[in-house]
Image 1 (cartoon, rainbow, N blue to C red):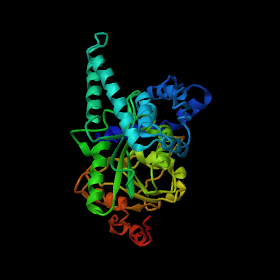
Image 2 (cartoon, rainbow, N blue to C red):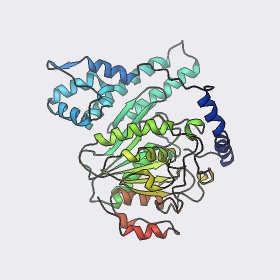
Image 3 (tube, one colour):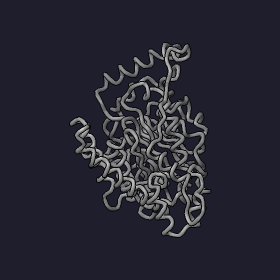
Image 4 (cartoon, rainbow, N blue to C red):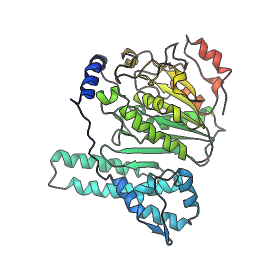
Length: 402
């Protein structure tokens, strides 16, 4: 979540929680209904074309097959054949769990270039309002930025507000992998910021990658800025419920199960991203060694044990983070449960010294970022616990490096 004035945010949350019973009554009595208007998205259209495609006289496998099945299929192709598929079905291949990551990067560059051309035309489309033309220009420039040389785009979907994921480092060679899971108001246009850059997924991931390299120069790491889910917009009903988190949890687990190699994975879940990680926890693959949450409104459970995961659970919150004043409870589906930094929750509570506000946890020079990096390289005994968390200090000696 981004930082706003404290009082209005708290008023929103308290009003939503106070209306929980009314909402549930209306929903169950038929006074409210949720309708989803499903049309073929650009990614789905590319997958539909893939479904009818062939290569070297062979029918292509189901794009939704298990990652292992798709990995074996791509292994039977030569470089020219793989490149041909990326050009024919860029959005399908670029978002295909099981496709080689380098091929996904290439396919997404193709898809981004295609979408850039679409938006460039829309910039001059007189049928659009001036505002529509400006929006087209903003998207076009964002696509251009994502196409800069050396960027590794692991996922891209232009639908709606857009979804995207980027890799820093080499996933194929990594000995440790970190995944940054951001919160509300995360989309294609907020994926990267010039102002307050460390509050956006790209800035968070770049900062963590640099800190991990400093913390463990001999450890090959990779960091993923993962904005490949539809995050809630603002602090409305979506942010107060787990609906977006449940949808995102499916996508996150699909990504994790398709990552190459066997390197341990640490999740860094900020704000509403921690709700998503909490929902995803019970199905995480065993290679996920750590879940670290910062500025969390709750993880949809009363205790860390309720996450039903073998991953070590870490939590931190800065002293001036407004999220601490949000009611930590769940009523009728609204709210996200217990405070992860509370003593009764059972997470190891880390120091966030130096971080300022709700969006400052990945700022260089902060204790919060240093702790994240130590976890990322597996240097558990080097992390610093919150001053009053004796359980954390006692538990560090038992922390196991994967």
